[in-house]
Amino acid sequence: MGNREFRGLWIGSTVSTVGDQLAAVALSLLVFERTQSPAWTALTWSLTLFPPLVSGPLLGWVADRFPRRTVMVWCAWLQAALMALMALPNVPLWVMIALLVVVLMIASPFLAAQEASLPHVLPDDRYDDGVALFGTSVDVAQMAGLAGAGFLVTGAGAHVALAIDAGTFVLVALLVQFSVRYRPAADPLGSRRDPEGPRGAFTLLVSEPRLRSLLGVRLLAGLAMVPEGLAVPLANDLGAVWAVGLILAIEPAANVLGVALLFRLVRDPAKRERLIGPLAILSLAPLVMFALDPNLTWTIALLVIAGMAGAYHTPARSAWMRILPDGYRGRAYGISRAALRTSQGGGMAAAGVVAHTVGSVTATIAGAGGIGILLATQAAVAWRRARARNEPEAVAI
Image (cartoon, rainbow, N blue to C red; front, top):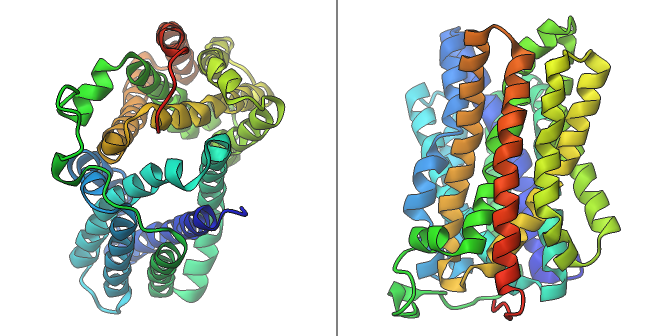
């Protein structure tokens, strides 16, 4: 936190995350108030998941072709202006939804530029710590934002919440402008690309063994998220519908605890990288125990273990970005973010279909755990082999 550039990015990211939760809840409540339709309300909430799937791969190049501070500042100002328009009274509902989609699409180049800037902002020996702090802060901010959003929106009104979110983007723009140092574009018009290297970010991701195996390990989140996707029927089967919120909160809370313990107990980044594979397997192994139809206490215990082991995503994320050549970081981040969102959403949707077909929520979760262990083992072996082949080489940022 003594690093001025990092501090500005971190504060902006945390505040903006809280504001985004306010906006999502506010818009959902507005939709329900005006339509009285649960279907339209759910559809509006789901819209927050889809824009990154498109804008990530399509707009990530902006973070490589232009100076990253400039990209972040312009994106933040555009988002602030669009959110301010949404906050105006009497704006048609369809216009507000369209503006929200654009805001979410603009977020992709901003996040790509932010992520690609961190290896330059932080020294090598503090980079992993910075990534860990970023990730855990986002988890906490999401929980806090969602927890407080309902009270604020119902108390002050949806338009006030939207205006607050617009204000958070103004704060982000100012923080980035005055705290982050200007750096030239990493790959202006492709002029700094190695002519003998891969022509595109996707080609690089699937051809470089370390990047490919790390991406595979991270995409296991689609199976690890199955209990969240089935939280409501799971709580119902346990005879504790009141525990739905608890089940949904376990994963992010346990992940924060797991990251804290991992970085507290394992100081060496190289040792944390060696733990990526075993922890990935451990994050899915507890799900197999749902085949025994555990009660609520054991359900919570198993989900806590799985969530804490999910801390492997933090060293995997930092190792992945460290390995990437600088000129590819923006585009690669956009692709990986879209892939991760797709795996999470697809995993939960598929789990719902399977649970409906087989008629058992716990069997579905156990099956996801079993499949996950097999895939995690394969990905862990691939990561260990790829890392061993490149371990003697110096990693260039």
